[in-house]
Length: 116
Image 1 (tube, one colour):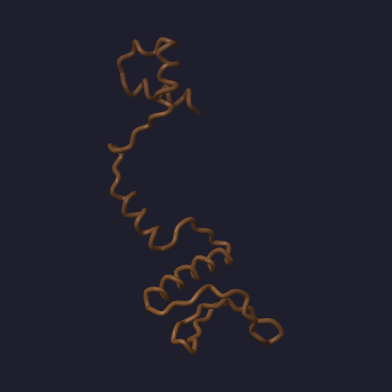
Image 2: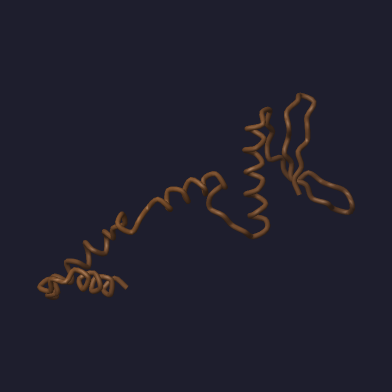
C-alpha cells in the first residue's frame, strides 16, 4: 500500500506502508516532490514497484513503453534486415554450392535452416 502525505514544508512524500497487527508501518519512503510533475513522476515509480510486488514484471515505465510502442509500430517488414546469420551462414551456403541457385527466397530458406 502507498500513500501521499503532505509535509509541513508543503512538499508531498510518497511512502510505502504495511499493515501489521492493525497498525500501518512505513516500509520505505519513495521520495518527495513539490510540483505536480515531481509527484506524478514518483507515482509512476510507485506503479512500477507495485507491479513488481504483484509479480507483473515490466521492463519499461508507462511513458517509455508508449514511446517504444510508437517506434515499433512505425517499423515495417521492408525495414528489417537480418545481418549476422546472412554474413556467417551465407558464406557457408556459398561454399556448399547453393550460390548457383538464383532463387533468392531459396537462399534465405537455406540460411535460415543452417541458422536454426
